Amino acid sequence: MDTDGGIHIINAGRQFCLPGYTFGPAVRDHYLIHYVFEGKGTYIVGDTAYSLSAGQAFIIYPGARTVYRADRDDPWGYQWVDFYGREADAIMARCGFRLGEDYICRTQQPEACADYLQEIADNYNQPDECRRLSACGYLYLFLSCIAHPRPRHKYVETIIQFIQLQYAYPITVADMAARVGLNRSYLCKIFKAATGLSPQEYLLNFRIERAKCLLRETDLSISEVAYSCGFRDFPHFSTQFKKRAGLSPGAYRRSAV
Image (tube, rainbow, N blue to C red):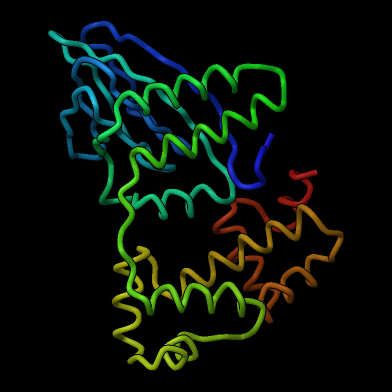
């Protein structure tokens, strides 16, 4: 159940690992966060290894090849939660996490992290839909404990708002630059530094997310959905949609029924 319309918890739990316990290499199609509450271990992303201890968390991103291993002398115990959803990328970005840069973090609120993760597990693993809604609430609280939001330039915030309001129209990066009175190349530089995406990529992702919503929640034809989300070239819409969603627009609509 996509409890709040934007994020879906897959599972949550707690594990005390045996010495040297290893998981992976593996690739996932969702986010997975482990919070270490005791002991030590190693988290490997690609060719980079991170040593972790109690009070730290490690983030597994969709599509990342990872391995994690408990220390042989002082094996870790951790709590975890895995989730996905149409708002998951945006939520993680707002928390300051970026693929390629942020794989581990430390919290100043270790007791709160452990409590929130336990509440997620206790509530999610119940058949009551209201309890699952509570689990999502605790997930947001947990993320707030490990977040390290990146300050954004005021121009970036203005462009994001501009995209959210004007995405249905044929806007360009030149239009965005003119909106804030900046040189196009400078705007692209500060926007990518703040969001990890170019303005054009951000606009395209936003349009695709809106298209997903319309495909799920309306009976508009696929061509009407494309037009409503700023695409004037239907083949381009279909190509970009499949590239980002993994399905054609028609297949995505059928899978959402």
